[in-house]
Length: 385
Ligand code: SF4
Ligand code: SF4
Image 1 (cartoon, helix red, strand yellow):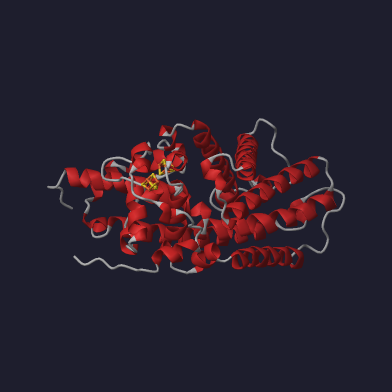
Image 2: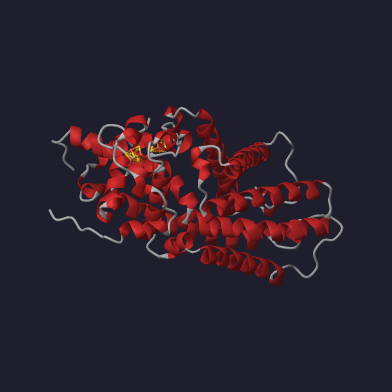
């Protein structure tokens, strides 16, 4: 079988943040120290070799970039300062751009101007829509969001956004699965996928592989950001959207944009507090880490790393402010903050979930699951559909 080689490949990767990989002399130390490199999936040295040789196809078929959690142990011990951990991060950005069939992710990752412009354009559109479609007579005595933007309209917009994002993310995840599994994707019997489905759930919710790394704090911070974000996303995108029609609730029972606060012990309110705390803790830790640059995973920051953290933290902070201005019953401040909140939250969702950093929430557990399925299939060569 012939293998295509692209001599300009490593140069192309510099646009995704690659800097030191050419220093690698292939001593193999990084693969030896990596706590997650095992069996048929050894990394990171193998992938550095592929990149240096211009073997783009090989990288496209590799699940390994998603099996690395960027603990930084390999970078800390590389004798050449080739920063293999950052190389794996670059691979994830690069693969995200290849999985994305729209071509948007590539532009987002390779041009700071495009990234910034995209965020500003989406934010301005959201702000304008909220100003144009506000009600004529908002309640100025009490902070009632539904008196300015009726819950039904917000629900429809939310449902449309959630559907488009799901289609984009699922189609990109399918492409990821197709590249990683190749012909095996449809050859593997369904029962093997079902038998290993638990792996998908476990990897998504616990990130248990990350826990094998020496620096457990990194795992904990990652887990906090992921669970906080997933909780907030479920509350907003799923429960708000499903509130009225699926469960047959009226607008005052809506789970998110509602004008009467739940009691403090209500599960939705407690989940909201958990999401807020988890995101603030995780993002503050990561921002301080990136400013200090002491730990390997925080030494090199791509523009998209900053954008992700800033949007996530601003969304949370404006959400906290709104919570208090509603409790204080300050109508105008609440309405203005709500517009600002959505001008930050929507670009974060629309741009980050299918095209940038958040996409790894899907790619990483799916790839870990597929590796398990593939191993299972190969250890049972007699398996048929
Ligand atoms: S430890 Fe450094 S020099 Fe050695 S193989 Fe890994 S990246 Fe290359
Ligand atoms: S950053 Fe950690 S998990 Fe990733 S390759 Fe290096 S040692 Fe392995």
